[in-house]
Length: 347
Ligand code: ZN
Image (cartoon, rainbow, N blue to C red; front, side, top):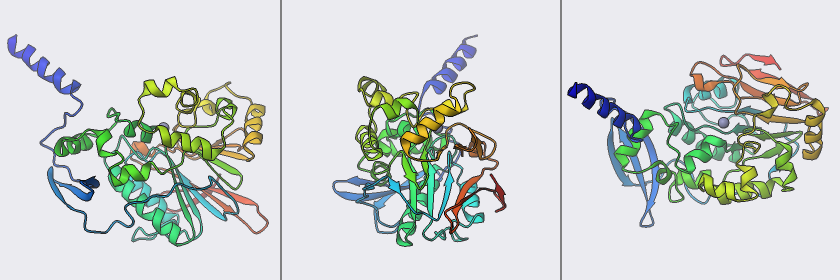
């Protein structure tokens, strides 16, 4: 009896401990670049063993990340968009490679095209770090080629940046244990990835499309903010506690259930009419709203193509899709669903 209760006690303690990870599984992770005493240190974990060394170059430009001057882009001939990668770097790579966005060596080949990632690279899966560094590299290559990669932040990015460890894979619990850090510290403003994430936008417009993780509700428009102003307010409040966010008249909406990173109303039966969606589009001065966050089996549309849903359940670690928008000479768009094998089906 006593041994059973002891066992239960240990089991409960293990479940409750946020940093519990199975030390028998060998994990490799990194790199993480962290500034210490004004010197950038590189942390690598190989089979649960940590190596720390002064950063000796590589990985591209690792500081001074610029914030976009404008969050509106016009005249873009081709756009690829993907969402909710959730730590599944292999699916992410396959979709980009087989649809011509990157080459076999994982380098940018989308030219002057734009790639939009509408948030939630973090959480659930075990290749988050790999996905982040791939995006980090591609963003710099895109810029050099005259194209652009937009990594928009989703609710899981904001959760990680305020230290919410509930959805991280066991591998990252092990990382935190080995590095003796909490999640908030691992991505704070003294880290390269943390600084980089803090330079990102949350809502952008390209041509006739507005992109964000969750969706746009009238509550957001009623704040009367320009996209640049809304994105700046998000940046200024990254990492704040839920309590603080709820207390602010703007942040209450921005981070709330009807805000751009959490809203799911387009997919709730009877919540909106098509006229409501038309009104949102008119105020935003676009023709389509492209969102992730609410999982579908494929790229889908709602409200006669006005809302395009691109969270294709990559989190299930089986497959996913990429939205491709190509504009012809008479400014007419063709929308396709890029498949894992590179087949492109009409949307
Ligand atoms: Zn989400």
